[in-house]
Each structure stands twice: as structure tokens, then as C-alpha cells.
Image 1 (tube, rainbow, N blue to C red):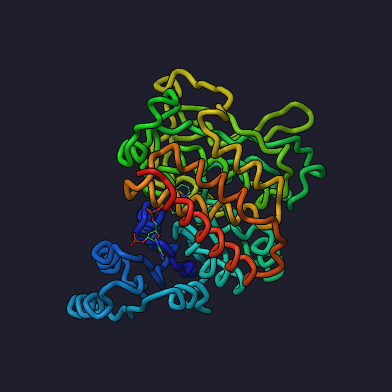
Image 2: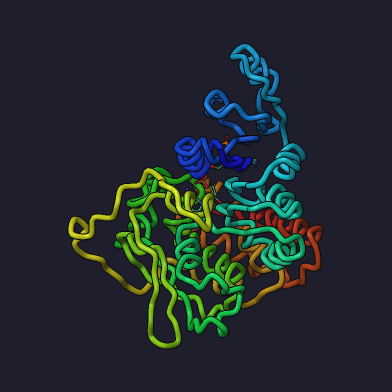
Length: 396
Ligand code: NDP
Ligand code: MG
């Protein structure tokens, strides 16, 4: 029997975490779950522990640790229950762990993901906010510690699959002209500005092609998700902003493309199901079944493409702006977006105010360099404070 790869899933209770465990369950001969983490969904984590029997389970600081530990014990499990940020870092860095799925949402994922990188693990990165807020530092740490970084975000996974295996962050050497990130356009692709004034959180979270967590669903509706992905691509593939183009493709069948200097375009296609990029990254450079149905092109019949509308979707332009400005700008953009999206989901601000708050935060925070992790965390905190102050000035 082959030795099983030992796995930590950060954010196991979320959409990506659940899809990851679905793929893992299909290949119990290849993967062994060592640690699962959640934050508030303790019942989901409990069920996952029953199925995967991890050595460790981590919950948020506010969760009922003793209750979960008692339930697991009465179910006959020896799973140790831990809580909080230090425990997340601990289970990401365990010496026995080979692979870490980084699927926490938002800035909370930065330090546990860095902890895995610093142990030279194979890191499967879904948590795109990590690269948006700390791209330069994160990529330097990947290099320094010899970690293997594999993108889970479907667009970046498609680009990764469409680049030569010896690419090594060298677009010119590989004859790459630019990449095209596809965007479904989200639920409001056809909506007028007037309609966008009144959209509700549930409408914004009803994505046409993908079932995802609420924060990324809102990001998809504003197109900030694509903006974050432009920044993510800059770091993953060492490209300039000019080498990253966004094209609206409502069917989400082409997951992204690479344009080469000779006119060739390579792409990865498939049904929109995150188990494909997850299985790809788990098994890379091999391939394993993911439970995803084969693509039925005649049933899809037509693929459409259009240019993004930067007027109705200003968040995409804000992300390019932050990327061009450099320094702390992307960290500020990410922090302001997290604050504004949470406020929208709580019904405190209208949909169109999200972009306004991010733009005003970028205007208010001076551009500064970010020499180290402490500076990044300070910028994140400062930008959140500015965004919260701006929120309080919003008409309800
Ligand atoms: P979900 O909201 O479904 O899941 C988020 C996970 O993070 C949950 O396990 C949640 O725990 C945990 N979590 C939330 N806050 C904290 C915190 N402060 N500390 C520790 N853990 C926390 O999100 P998704 O799975 O949709 O997305 C996860 C990441 O993957 C995001 O960065 C997203 O952009 C990215 N991504 C997602 C895709 C998708 O299809 N869903 C596609 C591409 C990228 P709990 O639920 O228990 O509270
Ligand atoms: Mg994506």
C-alpha cells in the first residue's frame, strides 16, 4: 500500500472545506485527515470528525470547546479539541502533516497559511485574501521555505494547468503574452444601476453557477472577487497588471486562459465544480477522480464572452488601482472590502455602498511600504478602522 498523505483542512466547515472532504472521502487509500478546523459551525465539524476521525479539531474562541470534546469522547473518538488562532497555526504546522488546504475566508487565514508555508508543506490555496493582503511576503516565504503552492481558485488552477510545468514565474521565458481570467459576471450581470440600488444580501448570494460561502458570493456579485483574483494572479504567476485581462464568460465552462506570443491560447474547461481544482491540487502531478460529471458541450451549446463593465462594477477598477499603486494598497482594499461586505450582509449598507466605502478607504489611507508581517497586520487593522468610521457615516 502507498503511504497516505496526511492532511490538515483549514476552514473544513465551509464550502471549499466540504468539497475537499468529499474528494478525500473518495480516496481514503491516498489521504488521511489529521486536523479539521471550523469557526462557528460546530455541528458540521462534529459530523466531519465522526466521518474522518482526525487527531485534532479546532473551533473559534467563542465556540463550545468542552461541549464538542465531550460529544466526540462519547462517540468513542480521541480527537483533541482546540480553539483560536494559535491552534490554527499549530495544526497547520504539525510535523506529521504533508498537505494543508487553506480554505478559511478572509484575513483570518493569513497566519495559519503562513505557518504551513514556513514548514515547507504542500499548500492548497483557496484563501485568496492571503495573497491580496500579503502577496510579496507570502511568495517570498514560499520560496525561502521550499513550500509547494498549488492554486485552488478555479481561474488560477486553470492558468496553472495551461502553463508549462517549468514556468517558474517567468512569463517571457515561457512565451506567455498575457492571461485571461474568466468571470461569470455574477447574479447581476444584466442588472441596471437602478436595480443594483435595491439588491438584498440573499439576492447577492444566489450565484448562477457556483454554490459558495456568503462573503465570496457578494464579492462575485460586485466583481470584487475578480479584482481580488487579478491581484492573486499577479503574485502566483509573476505578471504585471497589463498582463492580466478579465473577460466575462457567463457559462463558467472555460475556467481561464493563457495567451502565448505565437497566437496560441491554452485553457482549462470543465463543469463549474470546485472538486475539480481541489482534486487536481491534491493529486498533482497525478490525476484522481473528483466525482464531477464530464463536460457535455452539445448540452451547453453556446459559450458567450463580453468585456466587463467598470461603471456598474467599480470594484474591479479599484482592485487594478490598488495593484498599480502597490505598497499597502491591496491590503487596504482587502480590509475595506471585508468590512463593507460584512456590513452589507448585516443589512447595514446598500449594495452600491460597498464600492464607495472601499474607494474612500483607499483615498484616506496614505500609501506606505510593507516591510514585514507586523506592518501588514498594522495596515489591515488601520484600514478596518477607517472603513468602520466611514460606515458609521453612511445613511441607513
Ligand atoms: P465559507 O464561508 O463557506 O467557509 C469559510 C470557512 O472559514 C469556514 O470553515 C469558517 O468556519 C471558517 N472561518 C470563518 N471565519 C474564521 C475565523 N475568523 N477563524 C477561523 N476560521 C474562520 O467560505 P468558502 O469555502 O466559500 O471560501 C473559503 C475561501 O476560499 C475564501 O477565501 C474564498 O474566497 C475562497 N474560494 C472559494 C470558492 C468557492 O467556490 N466557495 C472558490 C474559490 C475561492 P465556520 O463556517 O465554522 O464559521
Ligand atoms: Mg475564482
